[in-house]
Length: 79
Image: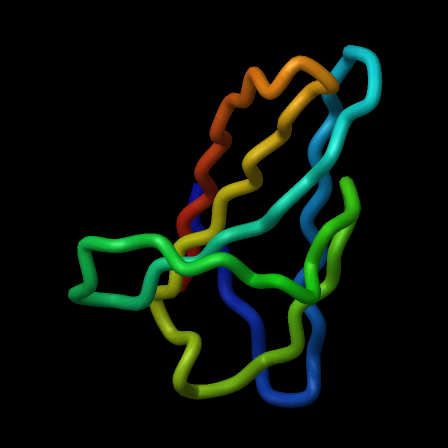
């Protein structure tokens, strides 16, 4: 779903997953782009993202990988 964040605010995201040895890597995609970029500083199940005008209409997703290397992606759009 879409949401709005104002200057000076934080947006909070979290994901719930079950499995052994899970790792989390959040990725973002900027408006008009077709590729996802790893957000290497965001590696937990819950994150916060500060407002920046450059992040308008940015999409986020979290790649959750288990100890066997299997992963899934969960996308979240924003505006």
